[in-house]
Amino acid sequence: MACNPHGTVQAGVHGVVLDAAMNFAVNAGLSRHDRTKATIELKTETMRPARRREACRARAVVRETRQIAFAEARIENSEGLLVSRATGTFLLHRADS
View 1 (cartoon, rainbow, N blue to C red):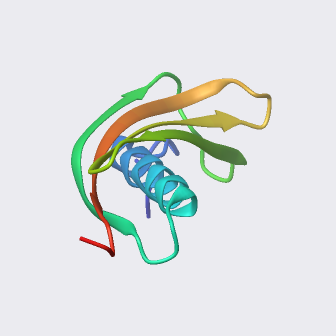
View 2 (cartoon, rainbow, N blue to C red):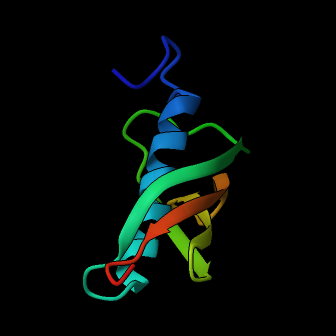
C-alpha cells in the first residue's frame, strides 16, 4: 500500500518514518516527563529508491536546547547505502514549566 505501481516506496512514507525516528530519538534523550510537543520544521531528501520488501534501517541523532530540539535522521538499505535523510526542529514540552 505504500508503494507505487513500480514497487517503489512513496516519498511521503520516508517522511513519516524519518519524522518518527527523530521524535523517538528526541524523547529518548529527555528527562522523565518531558516530551516533544510538535514538529516545527521537517526537510526530507530521497537519494535512491526503496523497493518493496527491501530491509532498511533508520537512525537519528539529536541536540537540544531548553525549548527546541534539532535532529537528523537517515534511512539506509541493507548494503548501508543512503536511501533518504531528513532534518527536523521540534518544540519541547518541559514538565517543570
